Image (cartoon, rainbow, N blue to C red; front, side):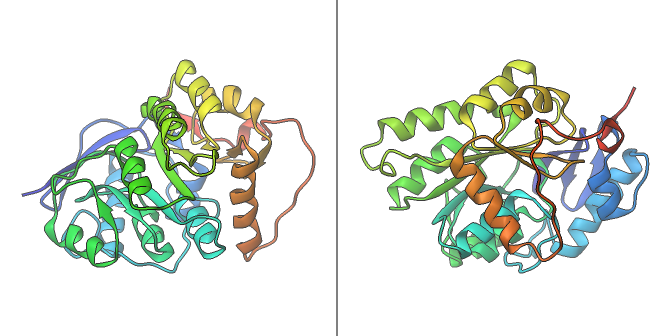
Amino acid sequence: MAEHMLEMAGALVRVRDGEIEVLTDPKVRWCPLRSGLYGHGVESRKTVESVLRGHMEELGMYGPHRVLELSDRPVSFGASEMIADAMRSGLVDAAVVVCEGAGTVVAARPEVVAALGAHMTGLVRTEPIEEVQSGLRERGCILLDDRGTIDQVEGYRRALAAGFERIVVTITGKRAFEAEEIRKLASASACGQAGEGPVIFSVHNLDVSEDQAEVLAEACDVVWGCASREVREVVGKRAKLQIGISIPVYALTDRGKRLVLNRALAFDESLVMFRATLPYGPEEKLPEMMD
């Protein structure tokens, strides 16, 4: 019986043997992205459970029949969509991501990255699902172990050891320290990437402190604003590029900009670009937190 802990809309959720238990109330009152994707208004334990149940039914998440390849791009400017497009364009060789039932995963195929990240929220910890692990290994992925360990620093080390050079690593804002450790590892590595190091994406950044936001601004290439005022005020002001308004995505480096703009190039719908002081976005379009 595998147990998984995750965060969704700020609520702590446990999934055990296919059963969902929302342990705490959501911290987000209303999210424009979730509202647009799932049709919910005010968030509650019931909406969190409903959305997660939909993910489990659609992609087999948290179970042995999990979808491990996907061509769809459900989020306009999501991390997995951005990474998958960068792989297809030859800008990225491998990505260090996470998957329930497997933990940290080094993946080199865009359709696998797309499947793992399509509806992934803040995975806190996970237990092994043998079918997921074997399916990922059959698709050329590298796992840290059979226990479902999540350690993005070690994942980056494994990616380097496997010979990958252009690597994207995803972290979460609450583990901002991993970005600093990855930068140190890249600098110290004799087999690094011609001095460039990895591209670091920070996702699931709700509830980060101001100090953590400072670390993200210093060490990351692309940071998702989520519903975090700290990220908008600290990271947004230092960004070179912002894409999206309601859930802004901030590129802090030229390499981050390249991957964001590459996603824009592959985006099928219309976009507008203009100069602005960052962060940009009226308050009424941003997510609302619970009182």
